[in-house]
Image (cartoon, rainbow, N blue to C red; front, side, top):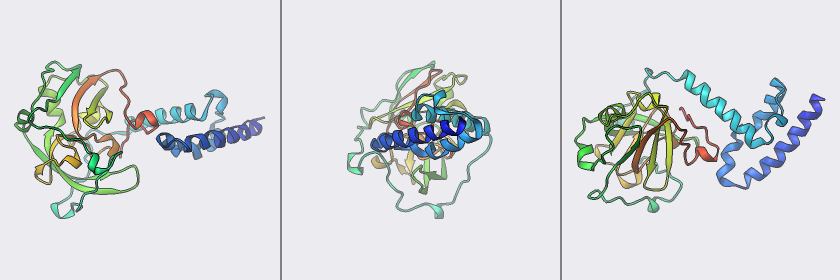
Length: 255
């Protein structure tokens, strides 16, 4: 009976996987498809418990998120490099061509704050640039399989959250970007010592293609978790999802 159910699952997986492949936004879901047969064999959990491959994959992804959160060490530091190690040119990567990167007017820009934050007054770039600055040379790791080393400078994000009175007992910090992108991270990562709200790249004002007016830089996360062109930050206990995460990418996204 179990063998018959597994065979049925295999047929269902192939059929639904074919459908997912035709949707570029959902291809990432297939990252775990090949493990589903093994999961059925090892645990006896079959598709009848979930109703579809997509639901089963989402359950696996939620399990992965929890496992990554449990093993994340807020005190562990990512490796830092020297100026000589910086990748030149640093790759451009987005869901659009470089020419389509958003143009943000620095004179009128205001960083909006919302959610569980005591002081939600908007911030100008001049005010942000006046915060205590630090820098790091770390490796950016892309989920597509490449990596590059860059130098980013800005304010430690935990310091920024402290200054605006963010409720750091909340679970999530979310980001809205000028290019329509959005994502969210867990609070322990937001408070990590190497998580920076960055305004410079290579000691110059952050170029448009790399995220002007600001980018959240987290060497402990994969690239898609590092939002660029940030225009709003919020703090919440309500799961906010993300652009790629809502299409099936792992939410925790640890590197």
